[in-house]
Length: 373
Image 1 (cartoon, rainbow, N blue to C red):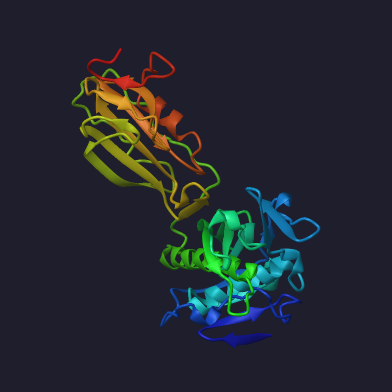
Image 2: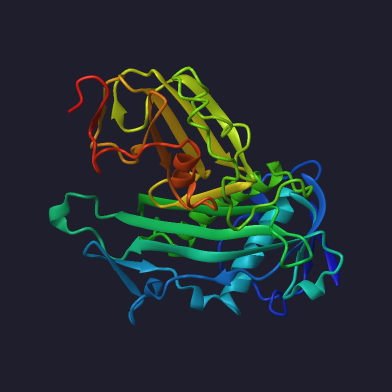
């Protein structure tokens, strides 16, 4: 049975979906497009529970974090199947935002033969915490204040065609964290942990919605599980001069699903001090967004720098994600930076091999160029 859910169609095939959800999510406040971003019918399969066991509270329903007790959410307390409840929140958000012409909740692909694409994903983390007791007197904090924490991570959200073996059109993580303080209400009641968790879930789903709405889902792009550089190595005999293109054909023919997004001739490697006189190329994965606690939302990318061999550069030990020295060739030092989860795991080694780089003479080099030891 299909029933309209303004502004898009929402079809509910989950047996327990008639049960009311206890996740306090305000779907009515989700902005609605005048027309669907994609004229597609998308079936959503139940999200997979990929949470770690240590996320469960103790027998008293308390979490201990940095020596402070918090009361937190417990997905097992949701009515019916917890993953069905979270999946329903996601589906209603996408329907309200009119990302697709039709959103269908199903238990299996066989239940939606009319679907153009299928959405799958994992719940890696969904939790909210509220400080269980009033702040101790020695803390100098107001007695009505409560610390709140929450984190949501939906991982490997993919849109794939009917064939489950086919590569997805897009692969995304959607996540957000909250670390804040809130006051108790007029009756002295502390904030609801589920309300705190829903704040992070709303930011995560807003981000997911925008990424899906802007994506090319025509089939032109596919997100392969693993990619590699297919270029033949640069000939050192024909490109030995420093005036040769610093990156060869790397910027013209990156791996499938990757593209050049930025170049510069006046750059400085991340995490190194010195004049900005290096060439830079930044390659980025298309149709992909990831999330980590340290980086937040990020797009997988690989940055490469080619610096004149005599340019003085010194390593900055305070940098969080500094560029790594790959080697030397044609009168240049080459450095790179690849941060986070990516489907091109051997990028730096493959780039070094393609450019025919001579490895650094020492394992750790903290100075390059003129005056370096």
